[in-house]
Length: 100
Image (tube, rainbow, N blue to C red; front, side, top):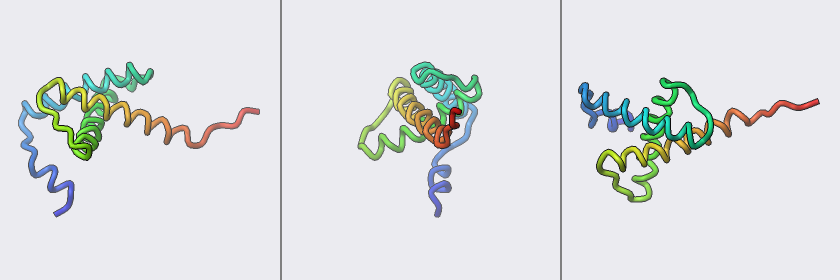
């Protein structure tokens, strides 16, 4: 069993679950874009927030932090989204242009 099958096997995709992901992703993505000074648009912020939630949840589980409730979920997603934006900036700036 692969990790993706294991993770996605526990998720029930109902309308309320998808709406929950979108709301948490939007809030975390917008906050992270505001703090990190740079936005990706509303869809980009949602994607950054959702991927950041997975990243933040993974890092929180490694540290033994348990997040329950809406506020804790948004905080973990926000931290993950900030880390994701920093990583994206490092990768995109890996080949800087030379100034002549």
